[in-house]
Length: 323
Image 1 (cartoon, helix red, strand yellow):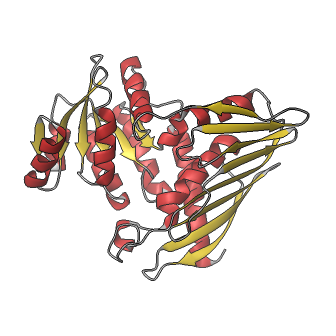
Image 2 (cartoon, one colour; image 1 turned 30 degrees about the horizontal axis):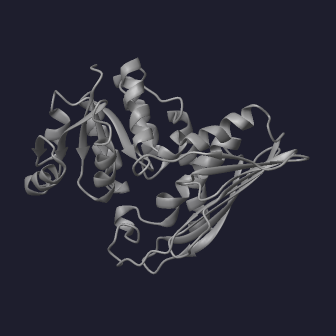
Image 3 (cartoon, helix red, strand yellow; image 1 turned 30 degrees about the vertical axis):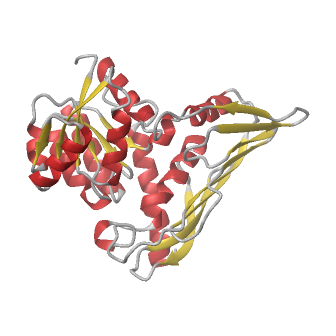
């Protein structure tokens, strides 16, 4: 493994553009060597736009390139299993767009393959690499606000998209929970771990996918409320309530300020600006792992991804069977 990690980008949509732009901000650490699309024309167009050397007209050709160290899987949710498995079986490390798969069973399959192959697999839940989210974890580990009793986390936006857009298309695993709910569930997991019980409710869109959903996550000595929506303009904050204080991360997805309130003390603020779109942080964590010979990131461990997928499964099930 060289100091400069060579990346392949699998797919050419919006998130592929975003991650590529951030990788190009790290010229001393990363090289975007190749891109793969379902058509060579689209791959060449993307390569030309971003100054990428190699363009492939299939995902299989990209995975077979012997010079690539790691592949970013940027396809819609319903394709994550097939494309990530293709790359893992080709011996390539993979950073896969969140959620890792559409359910826990598929996620377990990919984790088993990665561990069997001895290659790195990481879900691109980049917020866990955010310095202020890491600061939240550090403050809680130091007992800064006492025992955590409640977590509240939301990610809600109002989208105006056609019915065949991936967000609303059931064939592409659309819906608020898989696209947005994964973020508050992951952050609640970071603070409290996997819940013992999930009680959920929500509304369906005209296409049958979940448009808005709320869940109560029950733990032995704490609770969490998570909310997501595709047709509500939310505050998108994280609140962590402890026995001696609370933490507030405004707009936690890309927050640049963390506020700690403690009894008998003035509020304390922690400030952190994000480089680029914010995705350089997860890319650097992947590259650190590769240079160190690690096959899992301690910031986004695979067992945490599996636990999050189980919670998402339980949440989605409450909207379909009313349990």
